Amino acid sequence: MYKTVIFDLDGLLIDSEVISYQLYYDLLEKYGYHFSIEEYVQNYSGRTSIINMKQILDTYHLPMTLEEGLLFQDEKEKVYLKNVVLKQGAKELLDYLKNNGYQLILATSSIPLRAKSILRLHAIDDYFDNYVFGNEVKNSKPHPEVFIKAAMKAGCDVNDCLVLEDSEAGIEAAYRARIDVICIPDMKKPSNKYIKMTNAVLSSLEDVIEYLKEKELSS
Image (cartoon, rainbow, N blue to C red; front, top):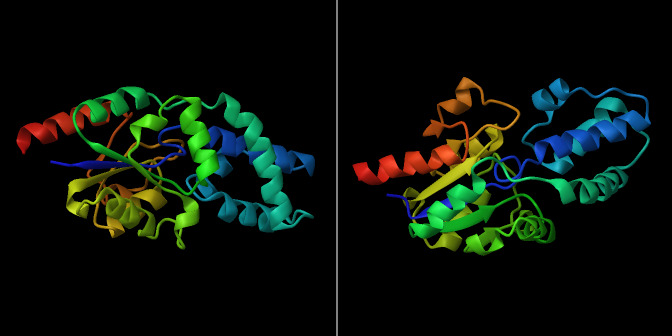
């Protein structure tokens, strides 16, 4: 039976992918480009903001530096994040895990201020026992570093941990860390290559409760 559940943040706990899309749409609209949701899902979904901004600037040859692009993104995101919502079943799953003795770790590429502000906004910061933030790791997903550190902070063997992820990069990172992973897809459903790396692909966070109940009964 698992002892620790490791959560991603963006696209998994909060509905932030739509915000990321809107940020890039706003930026490109300033320069006369149309940025479709299909292009975002195909080429940008589930990746870090730095990687995405570099690709946006290179692909569309925008007349700005990476630092200027990230500043635009940060300022816009502060406005949009005020209205960000939790993903379906998030609160129910957090309640279930806490009431049943699981340890909860947040493992995110986000900086501490941003992540904790989001958690406080939705009054879910008290659920988490520990955190791994983007400034604590040298390598972004699909490198396994973030999840290896999360297991270390939990004081658990990787076999006692479960990762919840929405992206292909996150799935691969957990797989490479040798930690079981469940995918709850956001905008982009993982390809078969990544589905084979998961223990399950579920429709919502609520479905994780039933998965864990079955796991508990069989252990």
